Length: 120
Image (cartoon, rainbow, N blue to C red; front, side, top):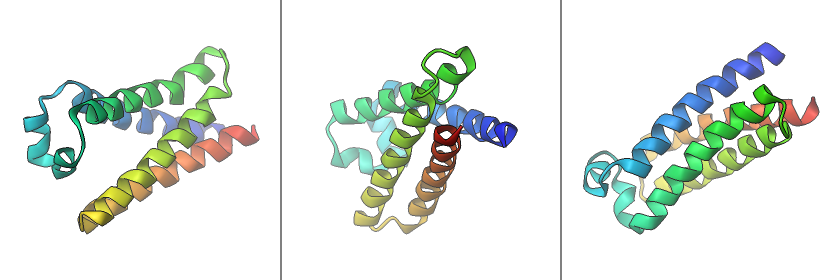
């Protein structure tokens, strides 16, 4: 089980790191070309989401890998799961049905890590 959790954590960390860096650094006009929801939020909030995703990605791996406050790993996974549920709600309100399922899959993977690591 530990190996499965590590594999999921690393995949999630890479995905959230890439998405977070993009949201935190790309011009909003460029982001809006592929992410229409960006126009519904303030630039500061879009940047906040990006930074939160980067920190969440670090939190998925670093605390447990370095054995420094390892409880932060399931906390990060829980926070990212909640973020993905929120993203699914935004997509549902915008009637962007194809985007809901990836958010829910990411939320489920984060929940898997959170439950697995809280139980350990």
